[in-house]
Length: 172
Image 1 (cartoon, rainbow, N blue to C red):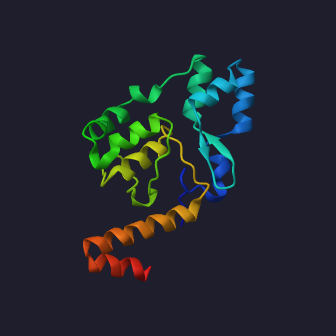
Image 2 (tube, rainbow, N blue to C red):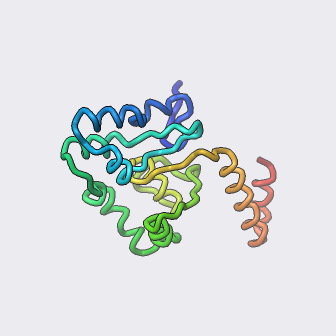
Image 3 (tube, one colour):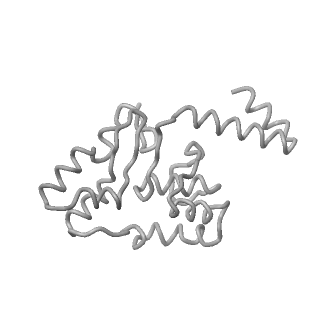
């Protein structure tokens, strides 16, 4: 038996899923990298308890190369997901544009199938990008967001007249 933890639901493993703010600051000081500039490039993950966690890959790349950049756009994963972004799969491109403009984007990470090939909607692609460390995730509102998402799904099913989906949502 084992428990699975992720960036979006790290629970008791939160401080071990990336570099803490303190660890990142120490690395920047040790290797003479501007912490404030790093913070501008890599926002990190804001966990439920207010702790910031940063992607080890992003921090190590910046420290090792002594410069900041969008390294993820040069990866195979980005190339695979670029197709979905370009075709605006389930509104994905619109969400990316909003985030580039400094806005937040609400997602439901529960739909993610934990693989890099099965995408049933924009939430799956965005969740994968979060897991890979390319996007940040603010889980501060935790269960409130899940409740809102479930409520939204119930409303949509009601409007569609999907009795089976309404019954399923009401039974959980």
